[in-house]
Image 1 (tube, rainbow, N blue to C red):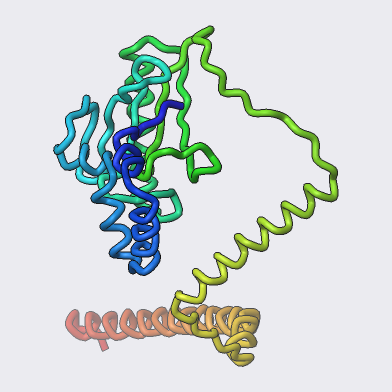
Image 2 (tube, helix red, strand yellow):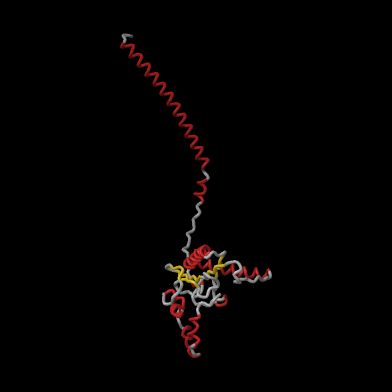
Length: 252
């Protein structure tokens, strides 16, 4: 991976030993905010983002900028970085890191189409031990073709089963602690009171059904009796009507 910031190292090489020690002591006494602002002023990529240093810009939005690497591993090698100054990935908020990789996904698709390549490497050098040379966090997007003579070979080692279990346990415990810390910031969930009366009431449906059946039976009987009464009344009405008719016709 090419070195991204030779301009940053040149001023420090001209400093005397006393000046370097003085600078180191000054940095130790800085607050996190002061240290971030100091790093931002020294960062060549922050100057690129602000427009003070020219670059071949490929993409830009409110949070992210993407430029062509001036010393590319392959043609179309892109550097994707947040506009805010962050040195390493753990400093970046989750929503911002998510947006950075969404941009990386879009640019990867664009390079596959535009540059007619067969694939791409999306790489983050997170920390000096991992090969990070820039003070500004970035994602490298390197278009790939078959037989392009770029070797990204990850060595395969064999570890004893006990050591694998130990590593897995330590990582799981570390993740568990972070989850517990996150849960501590959540508001407490009120406990749901258990009321036996409510539970018992839910199982009294058969009695209700019986009552419904009895009510229906009673209603049928009442309707039957009502029907008989109505017929009786109709007969009475028919009788009265016949007598009245007989009287009108001159009967008894």
